[in-house]
Length: 432
Ligand SMILES: Cc1cc2nc3c(=O)[nH]c(=O)nc-3n(C[C@H](O)[C@H](O)[C@H](O)COP(=O)(O)OP(=O)(O)OC[C@H]3O[C@@H](n4cnc5c(N)ncnc54)[C@H](O)[C@@H]3O)c2cc1C
Image (tube, rainbow, N blue to C red; front, side, top):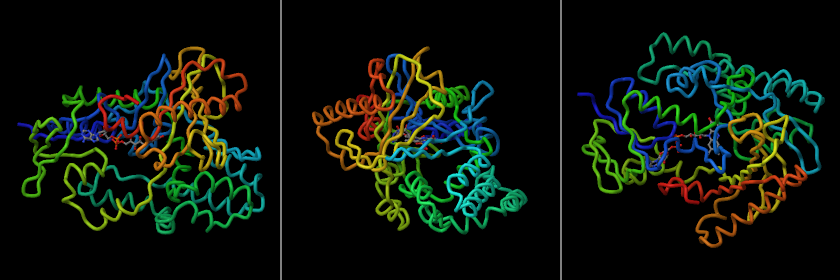
């Protein structure tokens, strides 16, 4: 008899767990509270348009350990088209000055030196950090399964970036840019506005550019939903079981060992092992009743700063709108959209690079901005409805400013808020 593993959550993590459990001969069952799998890696269809919520780039689209995992889980296969954007983002300041982030490091370095010649030495240092970080190769096996020889070989290969880890492992971009000591005010302004303002890890920033430069963090045509569907199919084809619209309310623990789960309708499912791929908070504080806490975990949940949630306004437009860049960030402090005063501005994403997102001859454009959770917590349903309408109206005005005449072609305007996010997880259907 195969040993039974219950996996809580059918997002990317739960699906991966399910696939590897099935490949290794376990009797796997994923319990997902939503009607579909994918979790945050999702999209929704409106009048023939698809509005994607997640995937813009994926580390490991070309090679390496992540690529092996994507191929084993069918995230990537030979039929999946991958594109690497030449420009990551164009940033525009309030006074109309432009700053471009190229994905090719040589090109970006050259651009940056032209942009801020007085910072040539520091720019070269930053780009050299980025190049060095391309030596990072995640271990292919988890701790416990790694062979000594493999660990030593990997560590040896990663020597050039060890100093980076030691230097910047705990620093954010703000610290990193300050340490580099750029003099050019515009350069400081643009880099800080995008990466410095949100406590973004310095190492993540450095490594992100190494991956882009290696063309190893591309975009998968089709986006998030087909990705989740491919993983789900792989899991089911391997014999995995999937129970949707079922919420786990408790993990049954006996003698400090998980023995199964209880669903919100009272159904009890026994298992030899339980893997929670749901969010940490629900797992630790709700399903396990807060019984397995230590100081580190308590401190993290009490004191760690959260990212601001986002509002996403997606437009279906009955016209082809081209763009040379996938994403433009407009730095506008205090631009009012509904009750939100933008913290950093807004981003406009034009999906013209992915023809699967809109019917032929049509386009999808998305506006995104951060909106503090305090504005959404406890909002009453009537106010919420009005707020969404207001955001829709004001976002149309913004879009019209950037693409004069576009309003006449807008067929769909879909507003997803931080409340949508919460409800998506709370309800069995996307109702808001
Ligand atoms: C706006 C946005 C953009 C992003 N962009 C990118 C990107 O470009 N590239 C990238 O690599 N990553 C990106 N990410 C991150 C990526 O989406 C997530 O890291 C990933 O989807 C997380 O997967 P997960 O399975 O760990 O969690 P989740 O997707 O949160 O899945 C958890 C699942 O558990 C289910 N669940 C929770 N509680 C229960 C319960 N009690 N019972 C049953 N089921 C339960 C939920 O319904 C959900 O399906 C983005 C995320 C967001 C929000």
